[in-house]
Image 1 (cartoon, rainbow, N blue to C red):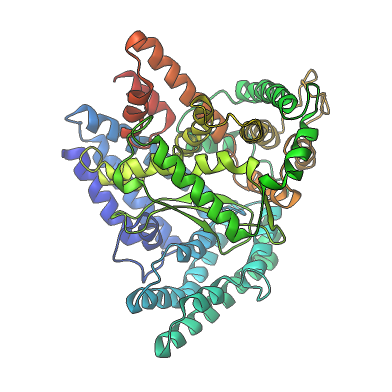
Image 2: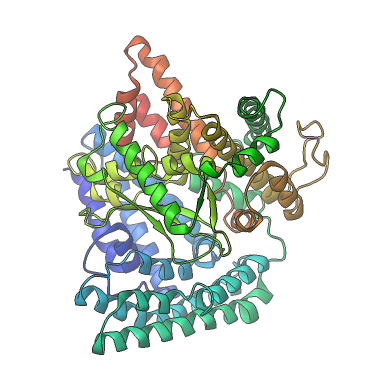
Amino acid sequence: MGRIDDIANRYVAEWAALSPTGATYVGISGYDDQLDDLSPDGYAAQADLTRRTLADLDATEPDTEAERIAREAMQERLGLDLARYDTGETTSEVSVITSGLHHSRMIFDLMPTEGAEAQANIAARLSLFAGAMEGYKTTLREAAAKGHVSSQAQLLKVAEQCDAWVDPQGDNVFHGLVERLGAEGALDADLRRGAAAATAAIAEFGQFLRTELAPHGRQKQAAGRERYELASQYFLGARIDLDETYAWGFAELARLEADMRTVAGQILTPGATIDEAVAALDADPTRTIQGKEAFRDWMQQLADQAISELHGTHFDIPEQVRRIECMIAPTSDGSVYYTGPSEDFARPGRMWWAVPQGITDFSTWREVTTVYHEGVPGHHLQIGQTAVRAEMLNRWQRLLCWVSGHGEGWALYAERLMDELGYLEDPGDKLGMLDGQAFRAARVIVDIGMHLELEIPKDNPFDFHPGERWTPELGWEFLREHCRVPDEMLRFELNRYLGWPGQAPSYKVGERIWLQARDDAKTRKGADFDLREFHRQALDLGALGLDPLRRALARL
């Protein structure tokens, strides 16, 4: 490997020491008994590493095309990381989906639990939790003093999450973890003591958000154009025309809903409405599973089946990636997410459901494409294949590079691909895919519209409040009209968009760019275009910003 790869690998080693939770997340061993320094000094140290690495990259010319791609990817990602730090975004970001608190809590879900050493690491990390939160409070105070603070509404929502996480009748995350471990003797005492301290720290952090930080929070949840442009570029790895994309969102949603009406007629009779078809599917006992554990088992069976059938036919799936675990998350936040395998693949890739409290029945027709999105050919194939390619990709590319538009765009593209490959011939499953696609298209409209406070087009195809300007209240109304998601989950979704500007559109916009890249490859190669080869080459590049991806694919 060359000089660019040396810089990248050195960055990973230094980064892991600065971010022990990140090291655990990507499966780098040796840091499971530590937590990140979330104080201002801790954030500054990571920013300093980023600056030094960028300077090294700028001063080093790549020797090969592979190194050129790696250099472009790293410059793009680290450059935006630094821009977010310098503008105060990194040190002030608190939302219902991401913050220093969320990262510190969620890492316990990924830690090894078997054996005395693994459990001792958990006890050690629990004992450090309160100190990490104190450092984080200092960071948030200093950021707020400089005018960088999340919206008051987001801060109060995260305080509510803290309440749920420590509620003995709710998630009770840390005490629940210790009970599941079943340790004995002195180790059990250490774990229980650590769980009590960490639980108290979360409760105190919730009070800090309510009483100290929220009064300084922004009253308006809209990010504004300047902040949104940076956020959109960060999540996509591409610069896009936000106004054109906003208009495209309306056209795309209208197209998808027309397709949904056609499929609704296949499920019932021609002329049937989408809602009538949804009601019929939900009433079908063969499409309903009761209980979280039974639903998890159904997901596992479908994920395993997809891997078995796609390997050797439409994809060449590496052996290490032919295993995935479906998990029920220990929280009830309403999110669905994927976590990649550890570096040595001892911990497999996992898809997680944080099922909201009170939801016990699951409609399979809605979730078939969710399994394809999170599993194969979606995130699990994409991330797992990248992790395997040690002979082609440096350690930073394999472990640390993640671009939402690339990853989520690929996963949404994977859902559509499974329809193209004939896996959604059942009209109920097809409606589920289209419903998910429409959900993501609605998010393009709502996210850009709310954060830029745009005018709703007077001639919009839904005749929705023409000429008015977007507000969170109108966002909620629009989502409820166009998304068939339980209110508990939809409310979480809206709060997520308001606290994480630019991320929600990255799915549909990312898919749009992936489809454009495939069309461009077809045009370049003509009769020589091979879809299986296109997928292999594209995934072998590793994760990239979508602008660097298009440039790299054009050179293949």
